[in-house]
Length: 226
Image 1 (cartoon, rainbow, N blue to C red):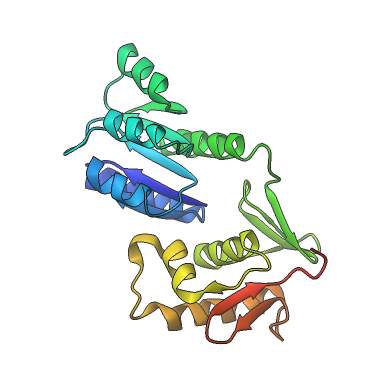
Image 2: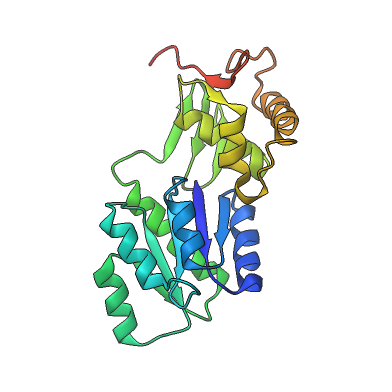
């Protein structure tokens, strides 16, 4: 799952980013409304955390443009303003939820989980290949009901490959999706190969028959039963 944080308070952004990274979400950040829109219209996000008071273009303007372009990405508005008028305006413009600052990180994470469940209510939260299951809601991976301890990056790679089952995904695409703001095309390819090697070892894919290497492209998980 990929989340965009839009807020002009760098310290708060970093606190939220670290909390989300610990939950194995992929996180991008933007410090103003214009940068946020640039990201939103280039990269797909599963959720957007959007502050109202932003430089260049405020959160209401970002949300309005987002909805005018028929993007249905869930939006959780974050603001120091607790007035009912701002809350109503945000919801009327298409926000999915509203959280006033200051807030506890536990409540924020609970709101995020609820919105992601709601947005995926027509889809199963469990992705599966063979005896391996990945639960996007609980962020757990199991093999034959035995838990597998993956790092956040390993989890995100496996999740992304499962979402793209039977489709070859390039190293560049994996890096861009999983590393987000940390993406560096000049050094990332080797790092991805190392993460894939470690991931294969943890899930018992020692021969590479599950996560297949597509020469000259990247990787693919093939579901023979699909």
